[in-house]
Length: 397
Ligand code: ZN
Image 1: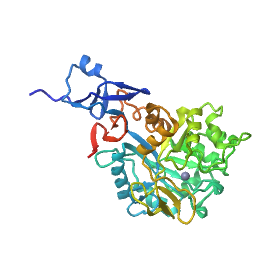
Image 2: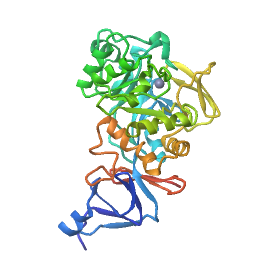
Image 3: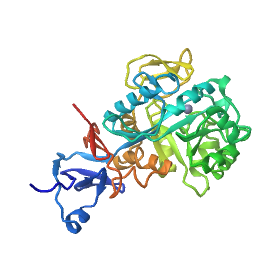
Image 4: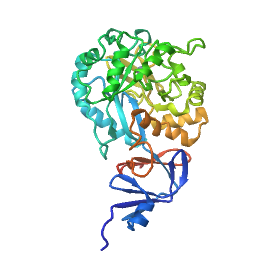
């Protein structure tokens, strides 16, 4: 019997690589994508298995950097069972092609952070669920005037910089993104300290002028939270946070955008992707109602009422996140903007990987990268199967 080489070849497939869809075999070994030249010519080994992909498209696994919950689970609410809740959502996300995500907590009471944050550990994905990259904390260091669905009585200023942040959150061990309004007292100091700790800072829920937003970027912020939502609308004399898309700051700023057909008008999506194509990151901002029919749910301390896919703070017309998973957001985005398929897929894989600084291992199908990918029907974009570290973790029935 021939010795096993651990090599798997995907044959008869189209793969998305370097912004192009090409017909090429994909080879994986030990959870990574490997170069055919390396294995066939240098090592001269044969695959253990060749899988006929029937002309499906292979895209890098989707990465959702803002997701509050789904399937009845709200990451900010039930502190006792949050671990099980994260696991449940992680598992469900596999059928949507999401291979990595950042569980997101909205403005909550101090006790919630101390109970919940230690329980959401970074975990490598598997058959049990998508990779948990770390937590995204949205609030309470945001503007009262742009609170959206956040509880006003819990909103705070980071007056003492990082000390105020630590006072509220307790630990930042499992945190990868913090959303802050840069105009608040102490915010710039806090942004600088967080960035120095390796945590990404997103600007959002803010009344910041463009100058204040640029200060935020100078102090280390590299992201905008759900562009257009919960910030000043574009004004030509002071374009505010939105103006960062075309500002002269040297650094690439990434911006999350919710393309669920509700939060952002198709024309606004087109303005964003034409102004700053590199920075566009599709996020679901999904709430507990994701994957479930109409009903009443939670987002942190608030009650959410969902009618026909629109999620509102109960009794108001304030939107509080989407009910749509990222695979659906990609389709909505592509249709609304007429952007290429390649671009639309990279906006949910490569761009979020770059925003988080993990694009040396995720977000691409290049050699040496993690074998996290999704098989899609090339016309309908239906998720046919999902793979993490070279293992098939979901197969469409
Ligand atoms: Zn928000």
